[in-house]
Amino acid sequence: MPELPEVEVTRLSFADRIAGARIVSARLGKPLRWPMGVDPASLAGRTVTGVRRRGKYLLLDLDEGLLLLHLGMSGSVSFAPTQPPPGPHDHFDLATSRGVLRLNDPRRFGAVVHAPSEDSPEARKLLGRLGVEPLGPDFDPRVFHVALRQRRAPIKQVLLAGDVVVGVGNIYASEALFLAGIRPTTSASRISLERATRLHAAVRDVLARAVAKGGSTLRDFSNAHGESGYFQLEAMVYDRAGEPCRACGTLVRRLVQGQRATYWCPTCQK
Ligand SMILES: [Zn+2]
Image (cartoon, rainbow, N blue to C red):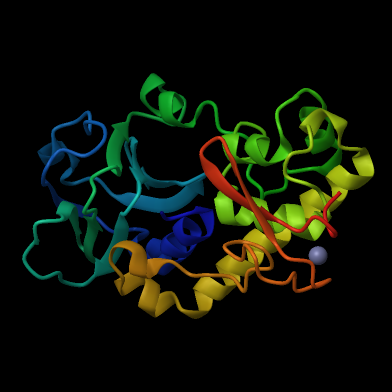
């Protein structure tokens, strides 16, 4: 599943090239997760003014309104001067004066939604409950700590829920908790300011490293389809159950929280 770093690297792969492009036509394939909310033909003539990211949404700003793209479980986006004829999994093409933006999504959990503005009900329905951006200036250790104090759920699940801080997926939550030395089962409300500050830094660190790693393989990623676009960090604990912890040698354990696998070191994480 594309996570925040993959979505950010996708954004970086075409944002500069598409900015300023005029839309020639738009084509929808099979239905995606949500309806687009506008006749694709009505997009012709508008200009793409830029591409931003909010959580795992790509926001294509137009001179009038915006398009919200979500990659779902298996989506990938490519932008090229020309594209081959659409295949069975190519469900959205945006032809512009600078190239064709294409969404390939075999499982069709992705979406392209039009909204008149970022404050419109259409956009707020998707973006309104998202927590702060982990790589942005609003993600502050003290504010983070205050938010955690109000949650009794295990910290791993609070991170995944996305309403405190957005876009920290399963791998990155496991890795950040390891780096911060915090057990994934710890109630969020019981994490001290000192430990919340460590976790804040760890979340930023794992995500920023993943973006940097993805950036170095940008060409491969932007041409990838489905899961081949996924880049793995050198994981400290994730998917390493029964293997020795890279820091202390204790065997890494696995548990399931909210139907998601969690990996942790019982010695390094308290
Ligand atoms: Zn350890």
